[in-house]
Length: 347
DNA sequence: AAGTCGGGGTG
DNA sequence: CACCCAGACTT
Image (cartoon, rainbow, N blue to C red; front, side):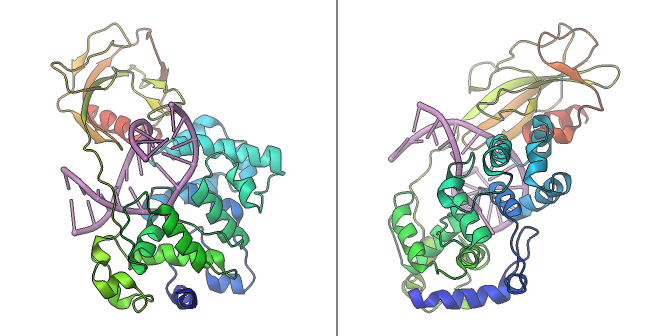
């Protein structure tokens, strides 16, 4: 299989997808080097997130903060607001920590060293290997969901994930070339995203069609095997949307730890598993509240949520949170579940 | 090893 | 509806 790496790189030379953060093989041959800041920022955004969802966020971030030094100097709230809607908000908090560590400890340049990268906040095994190989041409192997699927298929590996990870890592590490390790990594991921897809893989046009054991044995569509997941429970809660006559809204900053950490949100009850009656919590302002018609339905990683939305217009002093003026806040600054609650009040 | 942590696209 | 995704971090 080792000699097949060249076939994949040849395929990548022709079929590499164009992305705003990517340096094409042709540009690299002409002497262009990838920007480690762009590689890092894109790889963090791409953690468990699709290319389509990331593209606009990447463009806005690099326009607003062109270098890691610019980002390190940004206000926390501005970065969280710019990240709003992309999800996994710990990434945004760690993004700032990492940028500030690069400035404070590495002179404002990302270290060209796998161990040093791995020590930075928000950079785990995948992202450290991705930056090492893509930005610095260091021969480290990346193992993401795409690579797992491609390796499980070409080696017809039936051990279920995540137990199979070490085996699959051994396979892709053995295939990673000392020349163009970053292009190899991106090529396998492109292959997984466009040809070796989870369902109905396009084996007929795959550059690894001939050596692929799963294609030979007809097992490709059922690989990789995974240990079954638990079903998501349903939780209920209530949020309170208070609007002041001047158009300001009552919001609170959620604690850094936990769900939607560091993001703005509406005050409200805890979110609890299905109960006899829905949790109402304590209204943040003593006034008359009106139940908004309908409800908010939203699904997080490990539970479904149904929210009751209460609405009022008041200029009374709140017990919690702070009224943010129209200049200080827009609905796009909110995580999606909170934006859904806002939208419900506007119907 | 298992649980926490978003959101959108796909079938 | 469930599944998938260029995973990291905590316990």
